[in-house]
Length: 122
Length: 461
Image 1 (spheres, each protein chain N blue to C red):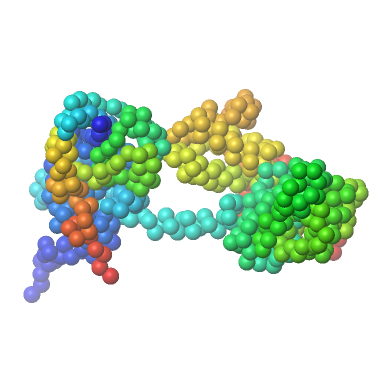
Image 2 (cartoon, chains in turn brown, orange):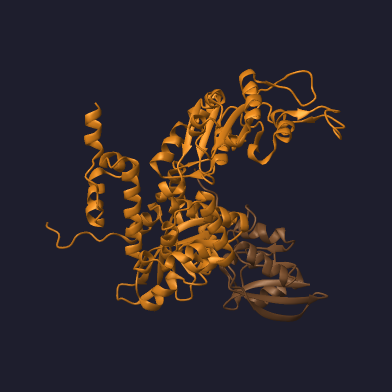
């Protein structure tokens, strides 16, 4: 299985919409068997989704992502794990051990509404 | 006792001020970790202060600048302030929020740099108001700032509500079908079908069965009843496109339908009532055809209840930039692209063309550019060959200002010709003040004939 991560300075890129590097990780039996970088300079939602699809990516791990990009990628049958933050190696380990959804790897304010959400006071 | 110095403002007052401003403010240390985060920053980003403090600024702010061109990073590096940089952030609901960002260094009393401060303003409301303002120039899928189109837009709601037959005249590609759809959508018949049929595309017999349908056995292979377009449009609106191409015989048949509001399917014996609003459109001048005897006068008067004349694009070139923006936004949406706009040079080329194919031709040119320019700005080399050929003309070989001035001069001259050189009318037509028009005429060196719209009018009255 191929998992793509949008990376920047050895961390998960803050915003998928303008991320410029992909790290592709091949995973077999819960182990990362191969990893390589891919340039990700295309800008439009459709070209970004098409690039991921061409690379046969099944799961995308990224930081924040706007709905137009997210919808286009999901339409290509790619699962998105959004609003992830942290060092790349730690995020890959967390993905392999199934702990990526823990609050340690969540961007601030992006967990469940009870845990993180800011409520506007009227 | 007289005080030597004014009272020092206590430190906590600064916090009160920061909490009361509507701009988001946060500060970072040298490690890019957030050290303060005000109330407005919580409101705009949706991130509570306790979750933001101590976190990396990019994981909280999540803007399009963070990775590529962070203003705060530049400030820290160059020691310079940056004011009102436009950007967007993405909140936890995946919504893009437009913001303007200003950054500066954070120093202590002795001038030592403690980190950076970033203030940002939510521009969503401004964007919304801008869109609302643009909506004033938009009806349905049609956009225009030209006074002639604005007159149509103004009366359109009343025309739509009236249920009267409408005749739309305009050259090919001026948006006759779009205008008919807009009338249908603004009318009480919206929600019911809108059916368009091109009368010029069918021979008489086929057109009859297409419009009115047929009964089983009406002709060979007519094995079962087929309802026509009038039946399909029941309760709604039918657009009879290119009505000027109807044969003389069919004009009589159509006249009866419009007069009696009933039709008879081919091979049928009973008349069927038609509750359909009719909109007719023509790319020819029907009044001229009546004079020549090629179009029936009685049918003309039957359909010419409310007439809307769509001006060709060459007479409203001021609409070209707005239409280009509209098509770029639409194609970006449809194709999932991110073309940001059009360069000045490419726009100057588009403005110097005459558009025999009108708005459809302009739309096709933009679509052509979308094929060759996947993102960024549309440049001249992305436009179709026939437009690029204009580069060799002396006017567009010159500097961009000269090219734009020549187009401006042409638009003014066209407006003056349309209004028989009456300066006041032409200024109204162009949507500018008469003194602006006089100034531009002088500045652009437009030669005017001796005739003056006013003198002629005075003689008549």
